[in-house]
Image (tube, rainbow, N blue to C red; front, side, top):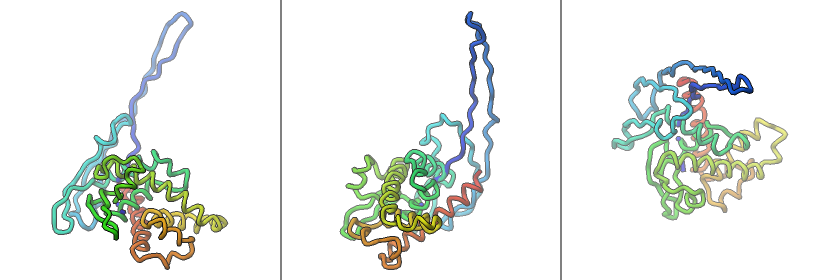
Length: 243
């Protein structure tokens, strides 16, 4: 399983105060500055670099309506993928909804996991036993069902489900690396390794990991860990450029 972006929203509001007990009412309104646009970062290596503008959206705007797609070349074919601003928006919304901060993770980690799974390119893969892995988050049908994911091919549903699954993975990983809490930096790094291990391996395979034997994991899992970390760094950079 394998790489969206959110902006802080602004909105105008009205405050109504009761002036007297006789029912006289006065109101005051405060307005936020008009939404501004910012230049998007250069697209990934697989895409032609071109400047884009991303508008700051008011809070009440539905997330799905903010998702924008662009056409890229991937594997010798033309495909549609979410643009960087949409990726950051979606990763942020999914991380917040799942409560990832409670387990020491953030939107960068959501972005990184999707980057490791599919590089944000919609695709269909399969596990070694032939079980299909679907959508941006590469969920097997049984895992998708367990997470309440109705359509793994829907980007919004998939990334929100991925964040929920990552929270489960972080809780699982914390139980494997509790002995490392005396070193906060090492613990944080190993927690993220554990999320990849939980996401990438079967129950039997993941239970061999103890936080210190990462080099003994399958090559594919080690690659997943590296790609997720690189994706998280990319998310932080893009968020800064798009802010």
